[in-house]
Length: 177
View 1: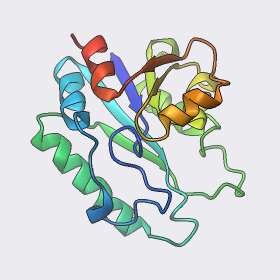
View 2: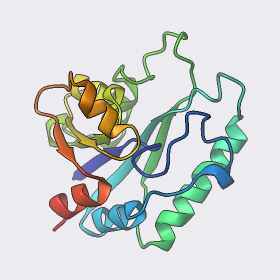
View 3: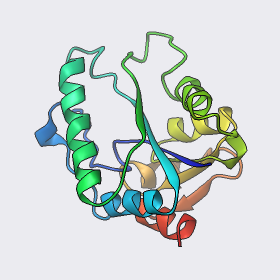
View 4: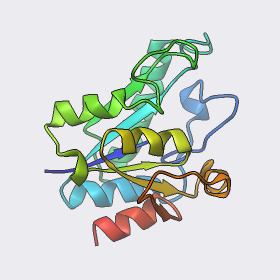
């Protein structure tokens, strides 16, 4: 089975330092929906793994997050793609949970649920914590330069063997030619 794990904010949709708190604030990045569709059509199982500390911060609740994700799923389906699952961490940075990236808990859950070999799984993110979590879980990290990706690359310290691509569309073009 081919499996790919995507971060949400900054990879699929525009990111916001004020958090994505409503479906109206969720806006896809150019080419991202088509990239997911391309991956889906070529046999990839596409999973989203995202930190959502806005829940712990009281900025939105689980019902609102479900509405945001419903918009995401609908937009991907309208582009001809499919997201097989969305995993999220609702905790804040000080909660000490195992699921908040850069810890690998979300990735380990995904790998277990899909019975996937980590070394065969690509994990795409725009922040160092995405790549660190992927690396810690044994996945193959890919940094995209959308969202906070350019700043992440400029700051350095990427995990070993991190691949850098301009955006999710470039990743899809390479993995699903």
